[in-house]
Amino acid sequence: MPSGRFKKILVANRGEIAIRVICACKELGIRTVAVYSEADRYSAHVRFADQAICIGPAKSARSYLEIPAVISAAEIANADAIHPGYGFLSENASFAEVCEASGIAFIGPKPDVIRLMGVKEQARAFMRDQGVPVLPGSTGVLQTPEEALEVAAQIGYPVILKASAGGGGRGMRVVQRAEDLPHLFLQAQQEAGAAFATPDVYLEKFISAPRHIEFQVLADELGSVEILGERECSIQRRHQKLIEESPSPAMTDSLRAEISAKLQKALSNARYTNAGTVEFLMDERGELYFIEVNARVQVEHPVTEMVTGIDIVKSQIRIAQGERLRSVIRGPVQLRGHAIECRINAENPETFAPSPGRVTGFHVPGGIGVRVDTWAYTDCLIPPYYDSLVAKLICHGYDRGEAIQRMARALDMFVVEGIHTSIPLHKKILAHPDFQAARLDTNFIARMLTPAKIETPV
Image 1 (cartoon, helix red, strand yellow):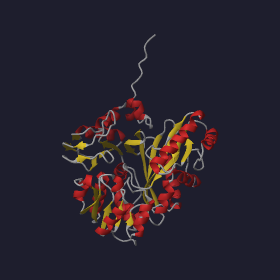
Image 2: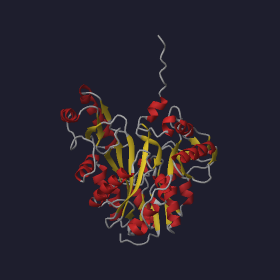
Image 3: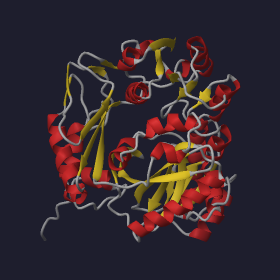
Image 4: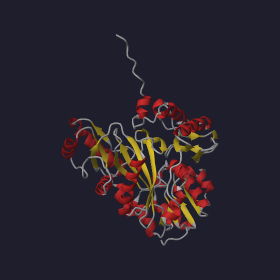
């Protein structure tokens, strides 16, 4: 649709990100439409939107992932645009195409760019050609275990097999030795096929203890690209992030400038538009290697907002309206202080088992430098059908030490009764000497939760 001011935006999501988009729209003077499943009838995003439409039963495949239902809701409400949030349809190129064909603006990258970045091996090849550092690996999808063995022999073990269309740790297998590769290759293919409807896998060098670092991107429709610094996302369990911070304690000014310049060139050449995140692994030498692009807003975007002062969601909307990036950002990007985010999940902090149910008491912390993004409230019901995220607690400080202290204080003041949450685990992480000293990698949680071996004197 032609650029111009949106009067009404449909939010094709639920939970805290739906609330987040509604807040941005309200500040821009734009009316909002919430869609909800039958399980989310009393969710906060339904209450705070200007209009709400039920799009189906509890299961997301028949509601939030049902493209005809979402488009019909937008047409019924006469919405100018759709914001997909993260997850669900946010990186679905076909959905973006249907929006365009229906005369509804899709607030995100163009369908062809989503397709390019959504197939990891294609994205790797593109970034490699643009001069962005990429881990050594296969140059395309592998068809047989024999092909995988040949590539692995060239780059050396350990290696990792990854689903080309994947994410969230599914379709991934680490291979330590050649004799294990054939059966792990077949396992990765089978899991990729079941999870992503395609068994395509590729192979790359495995870094045993990497840091996970990602760069936030904004780009307008005229080819301008801005990098809003980076985030450290190394605190993970089974490839699911638990704590994020910005800037990364491992980043240097020179490396940030070097990677930012390469990403600006690459993404401009890809004709990337709107918001996105480029993810890297950092090895023990401090070298960065591209792994994937998330063509959407990220769960952890608030830490970047806290250190840059730039509202990423409002920027998405303004860019989709046709505004130039320089008018959206208004000045050079500067990183001020340090921000940390804890994802408060409805799960047992010891077993990680989901903990759906009714919240019988809910109190969020406040004070200087504290932000809470949540959809929960006292007497709300956490349904078992969706992601377990209840809230995001974000704390900003003058430096990393103050941010950690502020987060520890805020976690102590955060009350969620009636269900289990990950708050005790976050407290344990923040108090750990390695976290406080910024000795981080993606194996941190496994090390922390593994009992130390006590040697018996001989």
